[in-house]
Image (cartoon, rainbow over the protein chains, first blue to last red):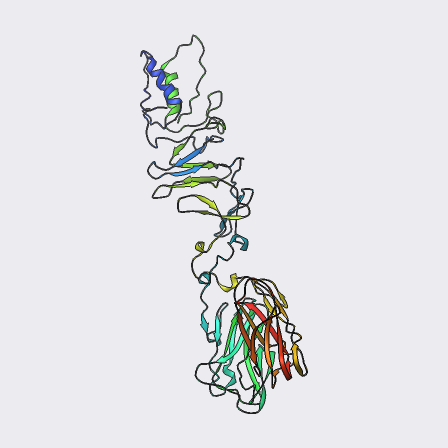
Length: 247
Length: 246
């Protein structure tokens, strides 16, 4: 390798052995960049250029950048050859780089089997926001709907508009926290609707089945629905709300 | 670089200064490949061979030019190392760079995800069936119109099988979907039980319209069913037993 200057020659000069040996030194072992004076110089030149390329660089290790802050790419220690071939096209959007058992690289979304089992803790799930479920505040996918209270017996309050992702939907008539509720008198039915479809009819009475607190699970496809309650045979009990959310 | 042709020398030739200076111009600044005739030529040679390799190439930037170009450029403000994995992954795996600059392939773990980022629509759906796989929702076929039940009975239409992963299981008796008939649950005497794999895990005196129980049970395949003991003219019309992991 060269650590010094490869000097120019002029006609009439004697060719000393040291000058020829400088060439040998420059061309063996480490080959260093030199400037136009023939001096070793950091970043003085390139190996090849964009028009004249070497076909392959056989290296054990590639060190990029400066000695103080290098980036090193080193050959793998596998017993057999393997290469990483970059995909032939860019991904359509920001995407994860994935390698397969053959060492091929591709882009793609993360699949479930690439996630370590039981690694996703509850805290990784986005918090579920609570909405009134009205036309002005419908429940988005993943949200929880809690309607206004049945208050003075207005059953129309027990209605929730929700967008679902296709998971089972829990619908519950539950206390609003303001007081005890009970069926007023006689017997009747409580019906829970998804849009115009009655999902269940539950008998209630003023005896042993006086509690109007009812819950069901609706199995339906993804969509935007309105869940509502109707009663027959007696006024709607007070102090109830309709809670709706996906499991 | 230079575009000089490096000529062959013959015995007896006079070596002029230009010959020496061709060599000098060849070696300084950009260094390009030359053919065996000494002519600058694209793809005329390699740097090292598979047997005779350079130990390291200290360069500021490496551009691999084919149909398109790949540029390798150091961008870190401090030293870091990218080392290819020492073994192929066993299956499709994401690439990651660890905090020592190692290029690794591994399954994603909790620490790879930011908190609170998975929305409900990213989770697998929970299909409903009477024999639910892990993560699914179990629903029994429904009791229909039971007539009067007396004595100790297993309530037909309340059996639901569920494969669990170890999370607590919510078991609930609720009205049957589809509005097949008015849901009623009434009995003047007796106890309603939730039975898991032949073992009673929850009991409550009736009347009780809805029955909800959180079962802390190990992962496995479990079957839940409703029984009534000491029933006296009990009715359990159009009710279904549901079971799902919380």
